[in-house]
Image (tube, rainbow, N blue to C red; front, side, top):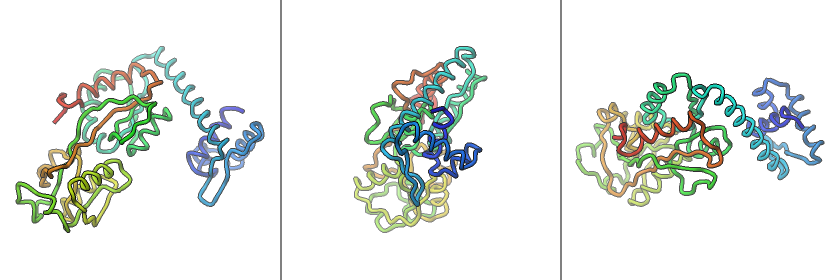
Length: 300
């Protein structure tokens, strides 16, 4: 068993097929197949089954994948630790977050980080909350920023950065735009444009609307909040969006109202408990606390 074989195995699982794994690794498909066959022969167990939808791991394959992920993560941690000892002001911090966080929360943090650590890099991975949590758990990201789910994996350390209220947004020419107060009854039967499932924010919005007794007539969905806001501006319907996603330009182009009973999202930063943060990650976490905690310099 060698690292190349394990890497091929991991890529087949992640990419969902031998063909995609070969393309990603710049190898031939027969070479990938030989790696998997060699692993199965050495271990005396079948690791995966092919079906019409791709590949499916056997219980033995699941066990090997978990062990392989730990092994590659340990190798990466060792490489980074050695690099940081030789060049503590250099290196890369991998940060996983959603588009809205990257657009509206991170700029002041990243500007401050660049001033303090000009030779370091930050790699940003844009995903939904569930994928962010998985990336951190798999050690593919040093830290993640997510909307806190109802249950958080016990292997993760977390810190709440801020509460992010949900706000009702309307087109400027909407029949309800002139009202200073909008009730849930006012929204009944009116077209809505909502963030698409399965985003964690959509789950928060759905729960919030149920709690205030609103059954939205959703006529359009998008997985991108910027698209949702644009469609609202165009008059396609009302929406519920996080306050964090409303920039100065949005406040000029949209009508923003409180809807009684809407809760706030909890925005949290996470990292693995068993992965001691290096100096760069520690610095980034400290800057997040300074700029993003409610009441910090960038809080609004």
